[in-house]
Image 1: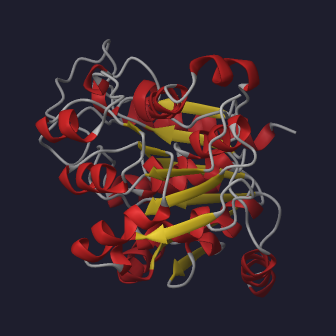
Image 2: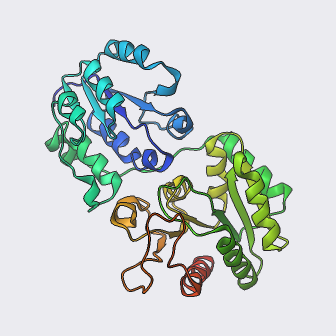
Length: 344
């Protein structure tokens, strides 16, 4: 086996995208256990990867001016640079690294000059999960070695302090084991249902499942909106966890719950990584579908697709919320949530 001393892997976009990159970080280490694995990520994603046992160093690219990191990266003396996501800045970093093997998706003009082992992926066709597209790029380092040692690992790692945050929140509110964790807020990369639709749905599941507790999760910046949802649900055992600390505090809450419900967003992928029982609402649109952006390596997921092909309402993808969401879809979600609570 060829000796490789250092591998830089960059994934500098959203939370869910980064979680779908964890199998790639793992496989780089599995292929080259003696190599130093260095990650380039965004500051808001640092907490997700800092505890991964197969990662040696993590750099937050936001901590550097572009010129500074472009100058610094060549001193890492990397043998391999893998860009799991590419933009013009990452392309410049790849080239500046001086790595003998520079691997990334070939799409934009800059990628032709940056990557000497580029991969034509055509991700917009969305024929497989984003995690698999990422793994294809790691495989490019050495396909034979990759196939010999291939294994899937997608787990995130929490520390005691994050589990303590969740434990304290559950204890202070006397929350039981039959808990539904819901993240109603999304950044807009895929469709969602409205706050009023969440309110109706959660009122009904509360009334159907005896002894249920519901936790609405959100970032602290959405606290007022989250509290408004709770006020309008109008039930006793519904709580708000507005997270202003580590992203892994949210992971601790999700881990301690029994069932998770949300859309195509980062917290849903956190729930997937933690092997939780999940009901997720996703669009049918190819580039937003569960095929491309679904939870990876978790068999406990039920996808609800309001705009599936047999639906009569034509979906307008310029709209933020589902046009095709109605009482039929609401009932489908309620039934799937009930099934998850009955599951041992």
